[in-house]
Length: 312
Ligand SMILES: NC(=O)CC[C@H](N)C(=O)O
Image (tube, rainbow, N blue to C red; front, side, top):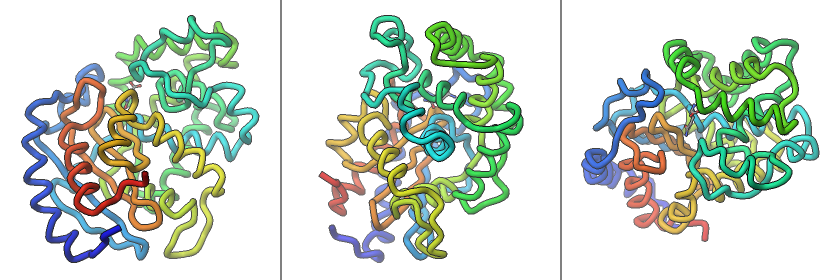
């Protein structure tokens, strides 16, 4: 792996400039109305190295909501709360091959559990496993955990996005009620959905998610303080899902073109990492038809090819 920091710093402006025009071919997500306000042409990247230093380029001051990126970390918290056996009685371990909000296989394939924890149905099932006395308590535990691993007590829920999603989430409600009928969800469906909407609406910057990614890149241990935040086994599980399902049904293409564990969100964020070296946060709100940032994926392709980052 060619990893000269100065060459990387010199190359980043060129890579961002070359990738930005790709945004024109995409659309900002509008099915959650509040997300449609994001600037379509924006593109930013932050790479955090093991000493906690960021190399940034582009629109890295932009804040955005985690959306599906949050699913990686609620999965980890659910594993820490319940262990593998309980978690994998509620969600499977395989890519679905369908859109992230599809309900097709919940009826078609026995035993009617979501294919994996990174599609919407799976992440809603995972939300029901977060420990806490009340939905509020569960949401607070998630927020506290995210603040810890992002190393920032400033991050918070964007209430505008939360309300917008909650008011327009007819499809997620359908998925959740279907899961309830299949016996996957126990408890009150609306309460589970509320926990899910809130963690999708946690607002971050590229450097916040770069730091979250760095922890995964370093097997769950903060390379600066030496503190273990996440057991290595659960990082291993999360990273495996990121490779097989993190970019939805474009995960195979991403693995071929970029070759890194990654998770995208419909706000245009991508969290990825160069294992053992960098945590990376990217924002580019214009999406392709699969729900991934067009310019963001192109930028990562350029960087991976230039610096030989592919794990494969
Ligand atoms: N792909 C995504 O980022 C989807 C997350 C979004 N909150 C939803 O439930 O639809």
